[in-house]
Amino acid sequence: MSNLPGDVTGLLLEWRGGNEDALSRLIPLVHEELHRLADRYIQRERAGHTLQATALVNEAYLRLIDAKRVQWRDRAHFLAISARLMRQVLVDYARSRGYQKRGGDAVRVTLVEEIAAVGEPGLELVALDDALQALAKFDERKSCVVELRSFGGLSVEETAAVLHVSPDTVMRDWKLAKAWLLRELGGGHGENEGRRT
Image (tube, rainbow, N blue to C red; front, side):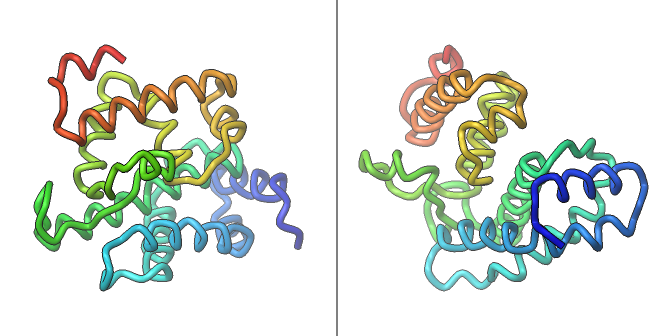
């Protein structure tokens, strides 16, 4: 069986239509990509983190099985939802360990390489999750762009396809969202100023 985007899309549509067998045929096609996503997350964690990539993939599988209400569209959409589920697993893990919102023994992630390149240290996963949720309250698309690109590893074009917007719109949202998140996470300016983006 080939791992073509069309194969994944077809199986997602079958699964959405109620064919439970489609999920068992889908998982081998996307396992490698899910593991790649999990590896990206785990590499961002602090040294000595006890959750491993395989456990993260397994937990994402369990949550995917419960995601029957999702109106699956295609491979990129599936990866975006998987990335969100993995982020939720790690946030739940961090919260269950009693990590503080900022500081202490918190789970840390780098938002994107570009932010790290301008000297921004790793950002805490729980704080980043809170900031993304705050951003989504007034601009859900910008929050989705960050999630799809930074956590899902999707290209600008794939992100545009998932969100049904142009690549130029994705790039504008990407730049504005990164600036807003840096300001929010840096404890810089007030809430109202950040919301003008």
